[in-house]
Amino acid sequence: MPTEPRLPNLFLVGAQKSGTTTLAVMLSQHPEIYMCQPKEPGYLAFGAAGYRALNGYGRPAAASSWVVASRAEYLGLFQDAPAQARYLGDASTWYLSEPGMAARLHNFNAEARILIILRQPADRAYSAWCHARRDNEEPYEQFAQALQAEPERKNPSHLLRYREMSHYLAPVRDYIKQFGRDRVHIMFYEDLRDRPESLWRGCCNFLELEPSGRTPAAHRQNSSGLPRSRALHRLVRSPRIKRTARRLLPLPFVSWAKERIDQSNLRRLPPLPRAERNALSREFSAEIEGLMNVTNRNLREWLPDE
Image 1 (cartoon, rainbow, N blue to C red):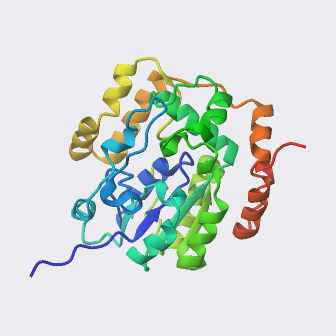
Image 2 (image 1 turned 180 degrees about the vertical axis):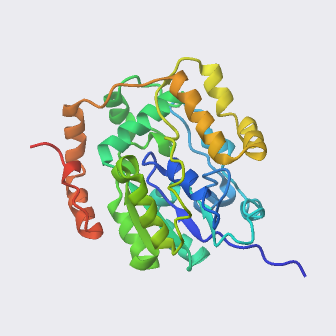
């Protein structure tokens, strides 16, 4: 009789634009963790319907080309996991933002471990806008214009839901309620950026794994900016090119090479002006206070300047 496929038991659920791509690459380098490709199959959020949201031009969002829409295809993403892999991982950031996802993941696999990484809400929103501009998904050339247009958009992709995707408190509480605090590990973008070794040790301790030598290479992934060459940018992100590269080359090398190309091809956008950052941060002040209570982390640097 054929054996039942192993279920994913590690979910890096977000937040979007908070370092999840870098963290997923780090996780994939541990011999006891197998992270699926594509990084964000999204099946447990959208099911057979697939991803039908629209970009800012009213066309199907880029994610519609890779989101998995069948259980068989989803479980097939993990069929090449080596026997020694204790964790099979899915890093779909929609799992933090879609309603009811904590209960859905718990029903799928109650023994799973949940990883969450969070970023200052206004910075996350601005980074998402930069990403959308980079990938030609956002027509508005000013972040303030895009924020103003957000409520009027019809079925926008999650990348364009700048405010909505920065609301973390309710889903974080929901994951803790569903899985228990011992199965939910909360991290912060600042630690990934400034203290990756410490963050990696904490992550491995939570997963009850040895850190396996030195901290895995953590090249900055999925950088935002405006491409100097749209053709090169599209080529690097072509699903066919990515599948071929990952089949023939080690993932850390593929990630490193992609980031080197981005460094030369992307023109960085200026940082979010302080006044705009403060204005948007004020909308999240109460949630930031709530997150401090839930995580026991001092997040006062996330609050707006007085």
